[in-house]
Length: 345
Image 1 (cartoon, one colour):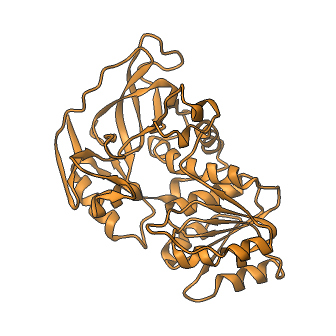
Image 2 (cartoon, rainbow, N blue to C red):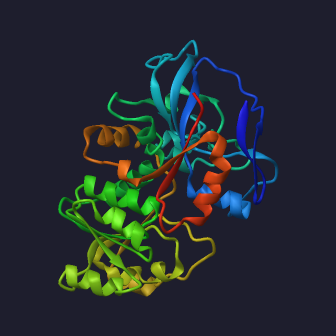
Image 3 (cartoon, rainbow, N blue to C red):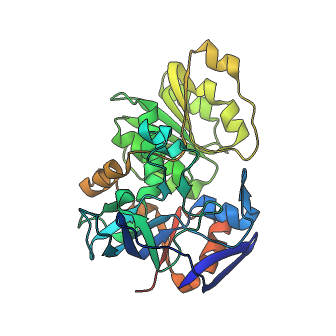
């Protein structure tokens, strides 16, 4: 089968690539339909590594996916050939202490698509555990199904924040994940969300949603905007989604006394933190790494119409043009939100 293969840093190819896999009794075989291009995929392409995850041999990219079940293992219940599905890309060890605690996203033994040395799903077919494969409602498209994975990160952040109805939240960073966090925060009960970034085209996209206000920090200090919106009190929750050192250093000034900071963005290098600023307000600090136990809720919100992710899909790109799609994703960071690759029928 042809796959999109990262041969090495800076070099992609579309070629036949065999991923050895056997359909187990609890697995399903899925014909891949739509795969989103994630920032991590692009980072592996442009840098060859993320932290201690290093691409040392050819690797198939892609982990945001939807498709159709074409075969089910003997012990699979609830899924059958023809079902439209999306797939949670991280597979934990079900016997691990982390899995038993319900925090399988931080299981040291988890295998995650397109994280070296694990291959991803930019290939016509994949085999995946039925337990991490979710049926899509009839009114949720394949494109929306492939958006469940990044939206799940927003869901995880909203849950970690412990949102109270009527909260005001700030999101620093209007990339795809920042937008997902903002929408999840609204769905979770926030009355208003202020999203800050440098890229006006992305702020225009997220600012079109009811309940979301935007601040271009090229033109106005974010702390000033938050102070005005809260009469000097500060935001109930601040979600940091940029991974930028200046944004992280400025977080305590944005939050109200007793508020919460949720760290979602992942800095490339260690960054300074204003510990005294956190202590002086007794701020609660939460961290997010992927997600656990939220896929079904994410799908339910999309199906209900309470969360509309369609405006965030910038383009659908045929599989045969996927290398050009990755080049576009690496270059059009200020205009595109989510590019998706559509596999051949």
